[in-house]
Length: 88
Image 1 (spheres, helix red, strand yellow):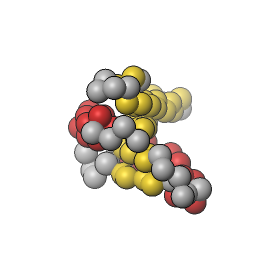
Image 2: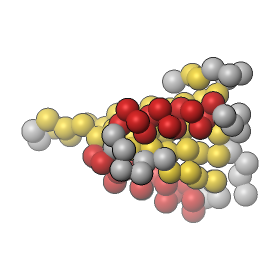
Image 3: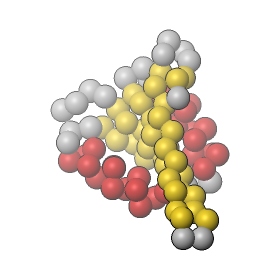
């Protein structure tokens, strides 16, 4: 297996994309933790960031679905630990 741990999170609008990425990662041998748990984007982002800070062998990805009318957009944040600090 792959040693890298991937911590995912999303709001309800980003769930579909997060689930797609989650399935891909699991099928390819990554250890995946999902921090979404029916939380809003801010709470989920905080939980993912804290988890990444606690584990140097992890990275975090948070998906936020945002759409206005017929123009849906997705935002993704990537968290990478760098010696007790986060880079995103």
